[in-house]
Image (tube, rainbow, N blue to C red; front, side, top):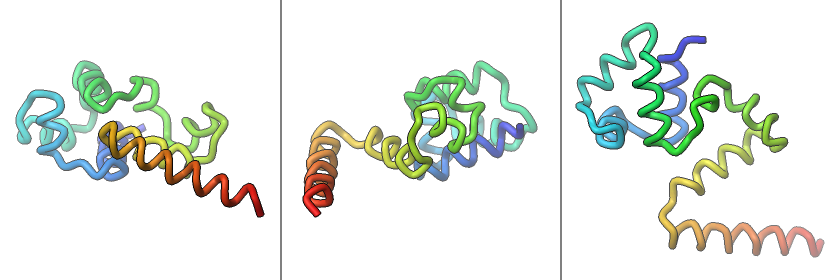
Length: 109
């Protein structure tokens, strides 16, 4: 597995820039750039990123479809759950109300 590609994929999925990761991890954008452009970021760097993103370290090493399979949900549902998880409390509550309303309407058909 190319860990730098995985990190780039996570950043794209979560709409994060190098500056965002740097701020979350407590380092500089240049350090994140070096991490991304190295062939293999070291495990400590990966651990810091996972902690900052609220993800388990094993999730970093598995592609989204395998994680979704582990949770027994579709990759799309996993992506949606990740997006909801990034919202603040108020936004998350509003999103969950919208989803519940939609599911209720679909269930009545």
